[in-house]
Image (cartoon, rainbow over all chains, first blue to last red; front, side, top):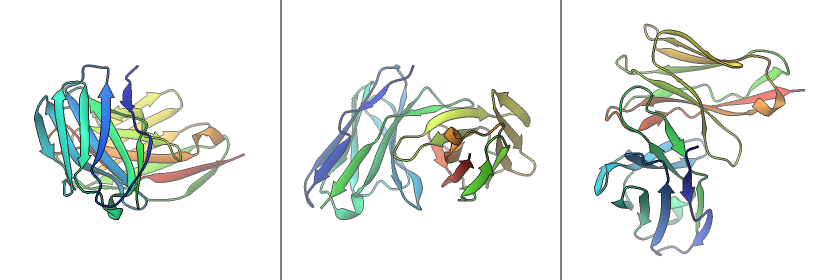
Length: 114
Length: 111
């Protein structure tokens, strides 16, 4: 089974704090993703990475950065947290492009910014 | 980016009935389509994917793809209360890596 681990499940941070969300996968997948999910807005792609040290912006990258120094680890960084970044953050991993490019999600990180 | 549209529901069906969930997409060139199920407070989990026109069956689930009409559907036979969840339709983005998701359809199966 694919295992995608998000170590921080529930966080409460103050406005302006720097926040790190970590994600680790054990399937040797090339691609890793960060989505956020909000009621009424669905799943929105923040950033993805298709290789170590490579990253691409998704639809809502503003206020976020990412780091992928090792294949199995993909970190999402909120440089200065704001209340509108209160959300559920989902890390996902996938094997490659094209047909059958299934992605698998971690359990999610619930972030509240106060 | 490729838009994916789903009726938000809720769709209510009695136990044992067939639930039919529909999804339309904007980009005629889209190739691969995915259905995920998401229980409240949990992360999405894959049900199945389809990339050829026609039907694909997996247990009680059947995905149907009609590229000419640009819609994908998911049928759940013999619906159970445990099938009550939000069902997300997704399509591969232009980059070929990530998925674009619809906002999901809420399904309620009543005993």
